[in-house]
Amino acid sequence: MPWVTDSLAHQPSQRIKILEGIARFIGRYKPERILRIAVDGVDGVGKTMFANELGSRVERMGRPVIRSSVDGFHNPREFRYRLGRTSPEGFYLDSYDYAALRTLLLDPLGPGGSGAYCSAAFDHVSDSQLPVQTHKALAGSVLILDGLFLHRQELRETWDFSIFLDAPFDITVPRGAARGPGWGGSPDPAAPSNRRYVEGQQIYLRKNQPRACANVVIDYSDLAAPSVIAWRLPAS
Image 1 (cartoon, rainbow, N blue to C red):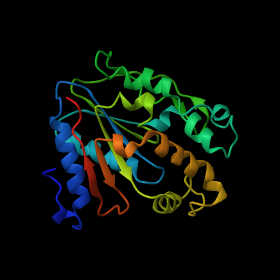
Image 2: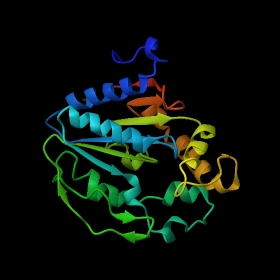
Image 3: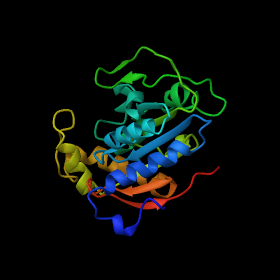
């Protein structure tokens, strides 16, 4: 990793250096192809901001960027809570519509795909389907998709490159709770109100081992000074 060294680990600009290093790699990687990039991690770790900043840097490298989130592919509320509103298994198994995610977004942008994609299909706040709005990807575009559970078996093969932001729940739960309305909840990972989410994500981590699957694993415990703990080149 020529763009990350131990001597940089505690510099204030380390986060920017990591983002720029990943963006440089993506900017040069398979420029003739549409790329599908995953930014994975548990709730509250900082996926959305990281993905937004990465997307801005990739655009400055000259590649068109498509930004999306798995949150645009929720299942309806009735389905999400069919195992009960506090069920960790229900959170892991039933939160997202992976068939729609693949059919509308990931497969059209993959090898042999049409390039005609829809970046969101469901509004989980209003619990309603969104109108299908289809866009045509430009040549060499980069999809950057952030969200939970992105290294599940049914998605793993779709990524050209993937990132896992890693931090313990005693950091990520208070971080998420501090975001205010829409996030709320207790800052205590052991609070009953957090059981569904923390234990559901523990199921994911145990079953899917995203730290072992991602191309880049970043310790994101300190937002100002993250560190790269694994870097694996994608298969050519």
